[in-house]
Length: 230
Image 1: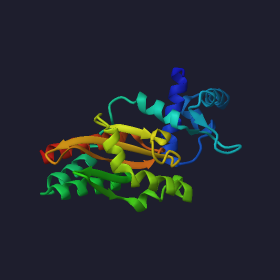
Image 2: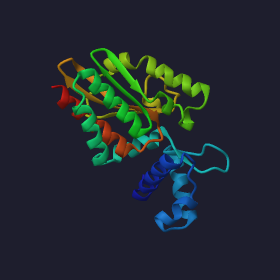
Image 3: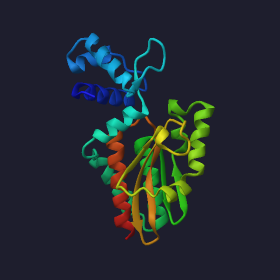
């Protein structure tokens, strides 16, 4: 992938996250100050390499799982939204008890990201934002909803087996060993507490994500819980 192709891929990922509509070459012309023909040629190259795809005839392009992975791998430091982080800190640090701290963190993540917030500690799984999750257009079909449900049904056991160890781990689409066809992304942070050495906080949502800010918020929340509970 050339530097310009990488920039175009980034633009497609970021624009698609906002619009949920396939991105055509005309939408990118002004951003790159070049002709639509040049953009089309670069998009064709990205498609041949498997980073984007054309979902319908005569439509624009959308990122593939491979495209999202390339995008996430190329991100630098996570984006930190101080306003949301401060609100999260007030809710978690003022909780007064372990269960309330986890619930507040999960509910806050769901509200801010419009994804399903999830947390697990000492064998207990906490979820919030289920209704919001299924409002995303990606999860409107019965098959995609079924695949998401499969992933959630086995989530606690899978996390114990996989034991993600990074400050934030991102599983995109078919990278998830369960619910591979759901089109879902799991962004999860591991934290330690006196109650469990393998506790997790994170979100589950469509692959169409604002990855920079969501990763930053999940990472921050994991550190926040670790500090609050130790």
